Amino acid sequence: MIIASFLIILAIFLIVGLASARQATGERTDYYLAGQSVSPWLTGLSAVATNNSGYLFIGVIGYAYATGLSALWLMFGWIVGDYIGSTFIHKKLRNATGVTKEASFASVLSRWYGDDFIYWRRIAAVVMVVFLGAYAAAQISAGGKALEGVLDIDPRIGAISVAAMILAYSIAGGIRASIWTDAIQSISMLIALIILAIVAFYDQGGLGEAFAAMQPLDEGRYMNLLPQPDELVGTGALAFGFFVLGWLAAGFSVVGQPHVMVRFMALDDENNMQRTRAWYYGFFILFYILAAGLGLLSRLFLPELASGDTELALPRMALELLPDVFVGLILAGIFAATMSTADSVVLSCSAAITHDLTPSRMEHPYLLKGATAAVTVGALAIALSGSQSVFTLVILAWSTLAVAFAPLLTLYALNRRVSETVAIGLMIGGIAIALVWRYGLGWHGGIYEGLPGIFIPLAIGWALSRPATTAEKKRGSVEQPAE
Image (cartoon, rainbow, N blue to C red):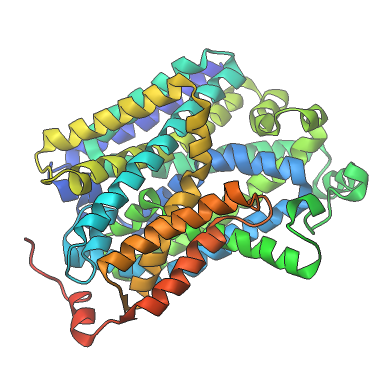
């Protein structure tokens, strides 16, 4: 029954993705941006599914299991930091996409004020292909591990299945297929979390009884809202402040993620951004409350995981508490989370190759789809190789993309103008700072490396930039003819 319910839900995902091909035109702006015709609710649900991926089902729940109530700071920082960025960046990025007529994240940034930062764009494309490619491999691998954890199936079979589904509907419908499937995957993810949360709380006798049972854990520290000393760099209020700022920076880092931001670039009208954000943050908050709650609850049901792999908490709880048909739904939810990010990442890599990296841009539909197929096969090969060095790279993918792109995009959104040399320096400098922070100083455990990696280059960039002139601002707000 687990396998049957799981396969039925996967079949629905595939049918929805393939159905999107009926609206495809074959043009590059349609393949990579759905012709900028995506409705607010689809944009919001797609962005939240892409943003949260297996990180929500596996990482957040495992983190809450291990750290206790202080995991709420992750939720607070991530959502508030993301929201701060959205208040002044998302709408301007959508507007710039319409003005430049470009179809990729890097190309829009490179032509923001009417110029073309060719060298910056090529370097940005390399960064995206390397780190997004590793990111895609991790998501494909996560799908295989989910099958192994619940059904004891060879993880390579699961990885191949994820890659095959992504390849089928992404080639058929491009980003429109990705967005349509993301939306239904968001709904399935939310239903899976709600069902498990209701059953788990009911089994404990309700909210009050469950939280009372957690009070004595870890000698009373488990339900302490303040982070534990081993989560901080230093002691006292200053250390706590940097801890919170680090999570805020992690949330703000979303503006540097090409595979997430392209969703807002594909919105039908920049004036619909407020409605889009309502859908996005409504689901975002629900997801995090449910994930954090399940992470805390899992400590009561699975105390043995405290000395093992805490990231297995969700599938293990499902197997212990739910009928087989709902275990299949949970497994499909985990699969949905991994696919909703993997397909987005694959398409962003494809856009970087066809639009930014090659000497001349690829326009033919078969070349665009061929690039998508090549990226998918490459990511699958990396996932099947099991290379630990690659998965170490994946840990850095989020922060590296953030420090590479968030400073420049923030300056542009604040109407500042920089030269191409400065733009390249900000990107390379941000990556260098993040690497030194993590590997040289080892401070990433208490202070997220994106905090210095974003805001030091941002401060330097502000000093080396100048205000955009009235004419330059006009070029950023008045539609230009296509080249």
